[in-house]
Image 1 (cartoon, one colour):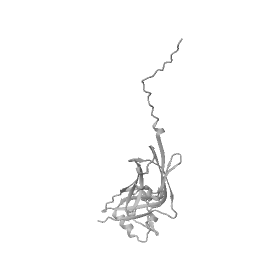
Image 2 (spheres, rainbow, N blue to C red):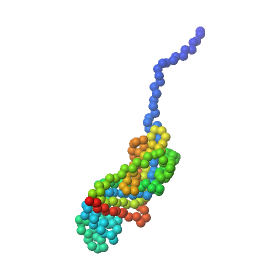
Image 3 (cartoon, helix red, strand yellow):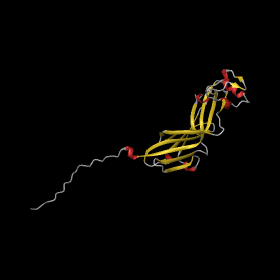
Image 4 (cartoon, helix red, strand yellow):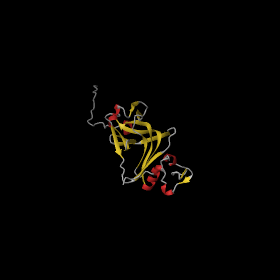
Length: 220
């Protein structure tokens, strides 16, 4: 008896199963740190701005925060007319309110893979970031209005969480800043046109630092 070995071939294609997207994602933490703070700009009445600007011997920062969260109404034992009071400085933000590190040579960026391996580290002012995008959103101020500019200084550390398919490319990164005058404050991170979630932010007050502010009367 002769036995014949028969090989059977099938024309059916074996379906390709894509791995779950979660297995394709690379996760990175983008850490940005430096000197920064909480910055607000808000409109106030011209009467309030003019009054405080006329107090040449008073450091307005001393009166920005009291136990009630408002500007102290007592100066050298004399009570200030309530009409010259203003809202708690951190709530006087009808124009802008941003919290983050400022753009200067102290600002540093570190980018690590999820398992901890470093993929990029540099001062933000360093040439290594050349080719990435520094996007500046200038805060508009109506010169005919009176406004309060205030800040509370601190050391800032922020962490953004990025998930992408493929390797990280620093030239696809955008750092978005809010700006008024020469001040630029980090207001977000973008990769390939998409916002990167801020997952953690912490701060430490700077030694001997206190809130400071400037009231500016309208020009008209």
